[in-house]
Structure formats: C-alpha cells, structure tokens
Amino acid sequence: MNAGQVRTGPWGTLVLLLIYAGAAYALSPFAGPLLMGAVLAVVGWPWQVRLERYLHLPRWFGALLHATAWVAVIIIPAVAIVDSVLPELHLLVLRWQTGMPLLTLPISLQQLPFVGNWLSAHLAEINGAYLSNFFRQHADIITSSLGQLWFFTLHTFFAALTVFALTLHGERIREMLQLAASELWGRDRGERFLHAAREAARSVLIGLIGVGVVEGILIGAAFAVAGLKMWPLWLVATALISPIPFGATTVVGAATLWLVFSGHWLAGLIIFAWGLVVITVADLVIRPLLTGSQTEAPFFLVFFSILGGAEAFGLIGLIIGPILVLLARGIWRSWERRVRLGA
Image (cartoon, rainbow, N blue to C red):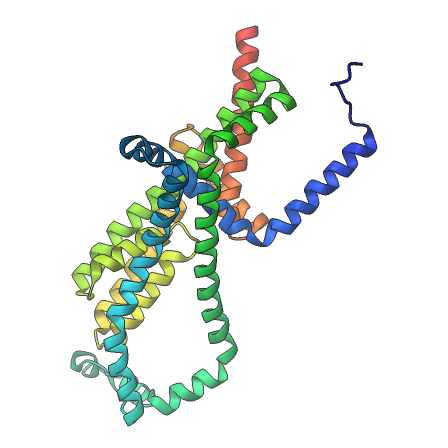
C-alpha cells in the first residue's frame, strides 16, 4: 500500500458516520431556511454570474447583491402591505375604543328572511369588549402566531445568509460535489448521479415557481376585482409566499378578514372561496404536473411524493419528498439506459 493510500477501517467508518449524523442533527432545526436558501441560490446563480461578468463585479459583491435581492423580494411587499393597512387599522382601533360594533352588516344582508335578523343580532355583540375578552382567552394562540411571524422573518434572513455563503463559493462547491460523487461511485456513475440530482432539483423548482405564478395571477386578479387597496402588492406577496406551505392561504385569509372588517362582506367571502379553489387546484394538480413535466415523471408518482414527503418530514417534506423520489427515479432510468445500451 502506498503512503498516500489510506483505508478507513470499520471503526473509523463508524466514527465518521457518527460525526456526520451529529452535524446533521445540529443543523436540523434550520433545515427549512438552509434548504430554501439552497433553492434560491440555485435559481439566482445564473443571473448572478451574468451580472458579475457584465458589470465586472467581484464575487463577494455579486453574492451580497444576490442575497440582498431575495430579502428585498420577500420582505418589501409584506412591509408595503402592512404600511397600507395601518391607517385603516387605526380607524378600527378608534371604533373599538368608542365601543361601536366593529362589524357592520350590509343592508342587503339585513333584509334577508330569518338570516338577516340572526346575523344582525349576533354581529351587534362583536364589539370592543367582546374582542377584548376573546383575545384574553386565546392569548396563547395569538402569541404563538406572532412568534411564528417572527420565526418566518428570522428564517428569511437565515436563508439569505445561506444564499450568500453558497454563491460566494459556487465553483468550489460544484467541484466538491463532483469529487465526492466520483469517489463514491466512480467518474461516470458520479456524473450520472449529479445529473439526476440537478434534474430533480430543477423540476421541483419549476413546480414551486409555477405554483407561485399561477396563484399570484389568479388570486391577484380577484384582489383587483374586489377593489382591495394596493392589490398589486397583495398579488406579489401571494406569488412570493405561495411556495411556502400555507403561505398563499395566509395571504388570502388576511385579505378576507380585511375586506370583512371594512364592510365588504360579499367581496371578502368571494375572495375566500376563490382563493381556496385556486390554492387547492394549484397544489394538488398544477404543482405535480409542472414538477413532473421536465423529467416526464408520472403524475401520481409526483403527487404522492409531495403528500408522502409532508407526512414523513413535515412541511419541509413538500420540497424534500419530490426531490428524493425524482432523484431515485432519475438514477433508475440512467441505470436502465446503460443496461439496455450494454445489452
């Protein structure tokens, strides 16, 4: 055995496995932002390289611009929506302080037989005192929801840091992956594995982006028809947040509540119903179709990989599940083609 050839014994292999398992466990609380950062880095990497070549930027500055752009794309629409809502929210607070009912029933609904009188009687009870008591009883849930909002904001910045770190060393990371794949499976098989991994990740990205575009356009059009203030920002927020589990549902719910509290009951209910239909069709039909379109994967294979991933890994499994299944399918098809050609 040459001096440069060192073989790892069974105990050395076990120690290495334990070290890597411990490292994975330590990073597991941040699996969501790390994975999302990796996805964003892959999406924006070609644009970053083009910008660096065109403007002659150093790599560190290109990576910084790349990460900052994603933060701006995600955070700015949300901040603009909150800023547009604050004046109306101030009026609701004033009504709360004066003891006036916060919800008013339109005259057309008040005139409905039986239902109109029942709604009027119950809505009259929803005033500042009622909501104050309601918030007091559900303080834990409200606090947890606000904590989740802070959690999302924090994870957004962690994802941006991941984008910066990965794109700062993009070529080196690619070389490391190629070297690792070659050492594990040989050069040819390693290249096939990386190709299958790239195709799987690309397919999942296309599904995520496609769902965002579809939900943003269809639900955003409903926002415009309903007369929602700053509806273009709500459209952008829906499109950007929709790849996140329950992201579009949160935006639709917020828009519905805002319209209802503003007195636009019919518009709010239509937005809610239309939003649920679009989100359901997009997640259960359009996402599997787009995800499998690049690799020609069967619809139901992708469909069950999305649902199974969520069941096995939680919400992050909506991304991990199809990547693993499409990767396994890509490796199998590569092996099948090699066997057929060899035969």
